[in-house]
Amino acid sequence: MSKTYNHLSLEERAVMQVMLDHSCSLRAIARKLRRSASTISRELVRGGGAVTEPLAAPSAGRPRTACGYRCAKAHQRAQRLARKARVA
Image (cartoon, rainbow, N blue to C red; front, side, top):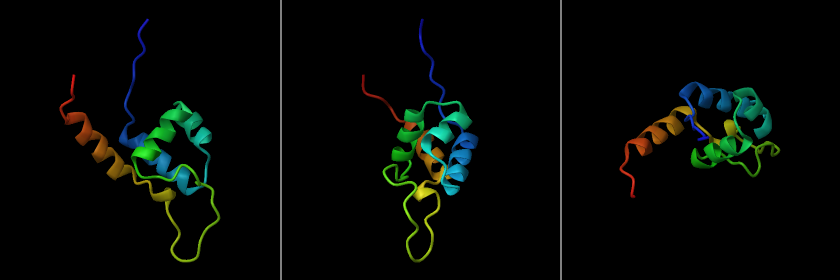
C-alpha cells in the first residue's frame, strides 16, 4: 500500500498565515487543515516562519505578522522548486 502526498495549496498556506496571525498553535493549524503537525512545521521552516517562538510576547515597534511567514511568497518558492530538476 503506497502513501500519497499532496502539496499544500495556496489556500491552505493562506489559512496558515491567518491562523498564525491569531497566535494559533501548530497543532491547531494542522487540525484545521487536516494535515500532520510536522507538515505545518516543515512548511513554516521552509517559508521563513519562526517555529521556535510563535507565541512570543510582542516586542516594541511594528508587530510581526505570522512570525515572518508569507503565504504567497512561500507558494511561489514551492512552485519554483517543484519545477527544478532533481538529482537521481
